Length: 253
Image (cartoon, rainbow, N blue to C red):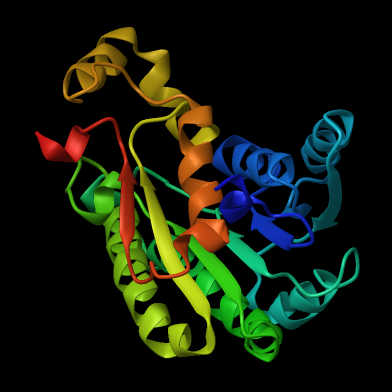
């Protein structure tokens, strides 16, 4: 049974890998045996994340890249091949949440949110899929959100992008699963990251959100590890087009 979850010999690319969910999922995949490429904009935190994986006995490399610039996507995808070869696993964890009131959303901020959260996961995956098709196996894990299913204050653009991620995941599965590529998404509840710093800085708000879960607490980053390893491994070979909510039962209530 453990062999089903063994990622030895696999290469995983994780965007947004310098912090938060991306960094934590990179550590989880490395712990399961994958050689991990962390991609993010900030070189310093990216190297720190790589160092943490290596210190724990894993293999990792850093690829600094600004995914907000669509014009550079092809060189970015090419650079991802350099450390360990073509990735078998892609985790699209890079994202932004500007938390703007409806009346403050501009065409520029809306386009930026959709571009980073929704367009880049598709175009990056499409650039990497041919090598997965050639091998007859691959895994794509998108990061959805509670807002893929629920509307929340100051979340119109973000919610639109994450609703799109849910449908993008299903469409990816329809397009590529016949070639042996599993396409699924993890939809986290409330976890302590840079994107949720304002929420966790407000003790009252944080506690109220915890009470909305069935478990009675907000998430810890390690709560995401099992879902990520499952969706990245052979254990999920007959699972595709699914959105797995890891939210302590938030959406069940």
